[in-house]
Amino acid sequence: MPMIYKLFFPVVWGSFVAYWCIAALWVRKIRISEPRLMRVAYLALAAVAWGMLRARDSWLRRLDARLWPMNGTPFFVGAAFLLIGLGFAVWARVHLGQFWSASVAVKEDHQLIRSGPYALVRHPIYTGILTGVLGTAIAVGQTGGLVALAVLGCGFLWKSRREERLMIQTFGDRYVRYIQEVPALVPFLHR
Image 1 (cartoon, rainbow, N blue to C red):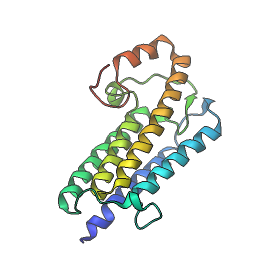
Image 2 (image 1 turned 90 degrees about the vertical axis):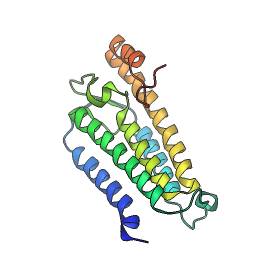
Image 3 (image 1 turned 90 degrees about the horizontal axis):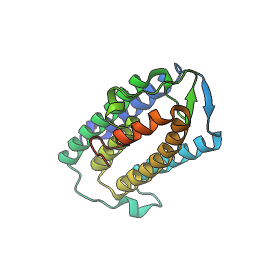
């Protein structure tokens, strides 16, 4: 198996996480935030999903079940989804700038961002990360990848609903109109 098959996904995900951590140093102070326990719950859910995605020869035997043969096609299709998804998430993060927060929060002088990727979906970071996980699941070709995608998707839906309640409290009717005009996670999917 060529080295690119072993290194590509860990290097891309590692670079993404490194960027995310570094970019977190330049954000505004939080004015209103959810309890820390909720943040821990999101991180635990993400860790469980990552474990399912990476399950190999583990006690999670059923997650190791092969869905399709390992060859170049799933690898390159998955790599394309990964790069497109994480690129979209990074674009959203850059566009959001100092208003980004790892937790459900309102920053000082918070503004409602509706341009760039936020004109396509209300939660483009989640959309991008889920697309990246889908790409990884395609490349891995195991049941665990699809289960991880479902677990993470449920986690992001849960977190997005909490965010939207806070944004409605903060921006009122402006955010309600945003909900009516822009889909949550899938671009061009209107109610």
